[in-house]
Image (cartoon, rainbow, N blue to C red; front, side, top):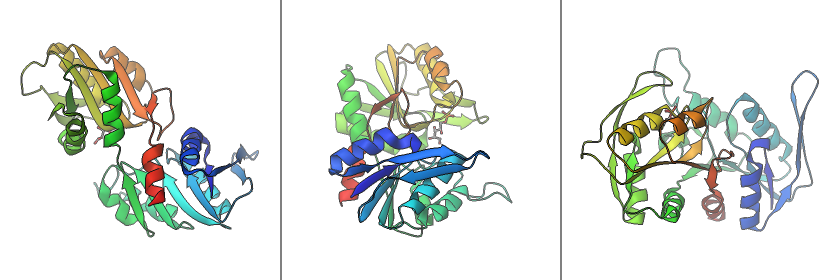
Length: 281
Ligand code: R5P
């Protein structure tokens, strides 16, 4: 078995290969003069794990090309971050179900798909091959435990994240709660104060995605205003769009951590173990 990765998923791909005891298929990626992407893989075996997060138009093209380049072997596709999953229905007439469009495109030429903390599980039904997600409650819980905080409150920024965050908290034996968020625009949210009264200890905000940082920056400012001693953020997928990291820092956030589903300086824990276990099943 070989593991072949797109350009933005090389570190995670190497970790998965190491855990599986598989070789890495070197992938050379460059551009033709007109901007089209050129890709070439090294020698493959009978079975290939293709690893690539879907982050942008280019990353989708890279993934499609890599899947095609691996067609002489069986292909298991790992999409650590499945972009476009948030447009999971037609919110206004004439809109695409973008998650469905991506899932259909990525089903071609692969035997099965594994992804990580997809925004909504129903998205998996759009793949035309078997598709499963792994979720990182255990990894996040272990990461928080290593911070060595005294009785932290594990807080979800909205109701949508509450059940995932409650599982993280239960694993560590910590208290949990959730805030109530109303989205004002793509970059701004409004948040109701924490109902349980001032929390003067450490708070760890846990979410599936940090994109512009608007959600967690708003929560951090409010918690600091209510007297929280420390505010930390842990997410699965750290998109960190634009100046998100600076925005979070200036909101009073002590710590910003994400997994390596999207590789960045904030990648502080790995999804590789969970993905490798799913592939071995
Ligand atoms: C929304 O439902 C997600 O769970 C995240 O809370 C959201 O994507 C975060 O976005 P941002 O960082 O731009 O506020």
